[in-house]
Length: 178
Image 1 (cartoon, rainbow, N blue to C red):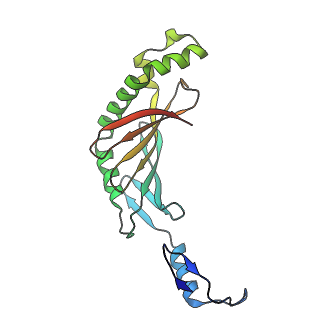
Image 2: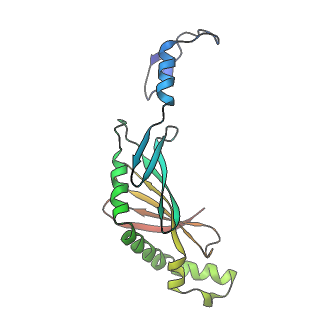
């Protein structure tokens, strides 16, 4: 086999189903070894199909799914992991700011949605804020984050709220997804 671009290969010779090539067997064995980052905040396993690490953390009684971009040179841990550690160090403050932002950005939308479902008198900004919880977090190698919040009270009928946060902490927006 001859290597071309992007880890793609070109078949030069077919040796049959019953034969093996030790070079390929070594590559397969190496590829099948799990790549794991273990830390006090959790364990993250490389999903090679998507080139990211997957794991979870506990926050406020919720399991938060985490996806971290892996780096191209396969250096461990990837930069995205250091951004996760920084986020976790200040998670309560950042969560507070993000939930306040969601309430500000989606307040009118929440009122519209709840009016179609039940009494709008139930909805207050505090009720909305307290219903929000962090469910998923994705961090890129450059430090940008995408967070997905749910709401315990089903204000948005099971839809998630997607938040994009830049490396500098600036929140780009809140969007209903799903």
